[in-house]
Length: 445
Image (cartoon, rainbow, N blue to C red; front, side, top):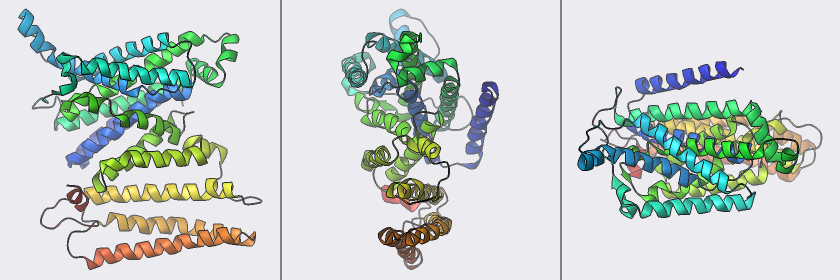
């Protein structure tokens, strides 16, 4: 697909998503959670331009993200500053302009980072980016104009520039930022610039010897990556309404921006998108149903699993195994994991995420039970085929393991149905009594 056509389709999908969400969803929690997922899409895509395409691991996501956030704080206070000291009256700076300025400032920081770390590679570059994050955080903590270590309160405007609440406005802006980030990543991947990035990633010395301008390309990569991260951070003060160094330099931003491309796949623009949607949605559901403290634990477990079993992410797994769920020749343990059990786990997780979303936004529907029914109906034929072929090849231990999966699933489904039918009070599969609030939200509160 040509770039112009892809950009047109991408913008159309983004606008349709914004319009349909406004029309179909009135629950503001969806916009709060969706904003975070879209924010992670931008951050992971931006990280992948430097870390995936160019091969330079960046642990300084918090520095670029916070630079964009505090740029918005400065612009927010600018009218009052000019009026107090110079007697000038200017209108409040609109948020889209803050996003552009945040991207420019963070891009300049990325350019400076690339220039100062030209001779560093591998782990040394990663350590330098981590040091950059610490330096920027120290500067913010000691800058009283933006609140310093105390933090600063940001009052949202009473009315959004477009119809709807202000959180819906932030959601729409972040959707457009995600569209822009994905479009830029895809355009880079299919251009001469992307070929240069890939040459640096594969072998920088050989690329330089072949005439590839590695110096300029690294500066471009760090600048684009930093600018997109700064643009993602610019709306943060209006989202949280209270900004302090702890929230803006949160470890979750650095961890997730690395984990999402790794899980989705770092060699394509699709990988960070899939990883951000998967991990972001799981973390939002865990925040509602368990605790926000479980978010990094979930990310860590998934990261360990993918680094061990699928080091090239979901995209790499699909390219290496174009015929998933197919068994040819001798069945090995690795083939069982890569071609059967790992996709099986993915199906179960995806179906349960969909069921949980149904449960949260439509509490009258037993979404989790329906999800379990659908998951078992979907994977049962594959379980039967896998078990039979394992048994035919004499792998009785693996046959028993696979045979136990539907049994455990059936017991779990029976327990769920019993809880649904036998408990007349509040439970995890229906609305809390007399409140109209989904039980998952009520339990989290």
